[in-house]
View 1 (cartoon, one colour):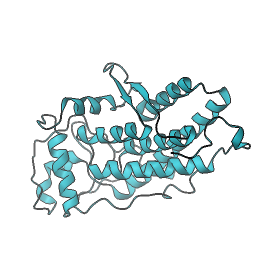
View 2: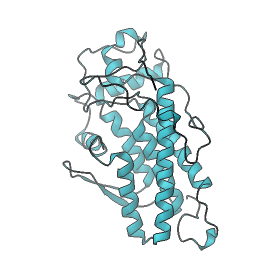
View 3: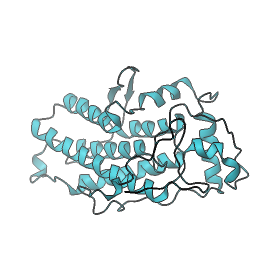
Length: 277
């Protein structure tokens, strides 16, 4: 579909260094598998540019997400790169499928249980992607790199422009709000917790080459929150992007768990029938 970026303060526009056109502005038109509509769980608007909430998020990412940040810790830098899952990788959805595979093997899932698990997981991931892109292209909110360089135009006395500011990683070419990583991770963590009957599952995940880093978690939700915050550490998302993205993902994941592929004999299933503790 035709898409023309805005020009007002707060409007998304192509970002450096590539100034690429927006990716998939037509995706909100895709019919979801389980949701009744792409807007079913759409989050509210991001904070107003003149608000204190916006200023707090602005100053957080300006400090911690800069390429030359002195406030981002080495672990936060590792987290940003661990969850990068960019072009040429299996993406966040693939990362969560690998996590599901590892846990399913460790738990001794049967073939039938795995068929249901991976169907639920990927229906949720598909639908949350549609829902997220619907929100992105509804609000068309600018990315930190644009906002920080053009802060003199935002009308907020708590923000200060830095025309040379650069994030840790290259900014993706689509609107900021909400975060796709947060959406996908929130949905995946919710589906996995609902399927296994608990959020308290210990697992280890390895990044794809060339980083080759292993990180361990005690809960699905812990990994989801870390994946979401990785985008703030990377300098490409606002804190409200990831908070509302996680919430959207959780709502979509729970909806899919409760309404799709319900076992005909729930008490006979070894997994996926208990309530989350």
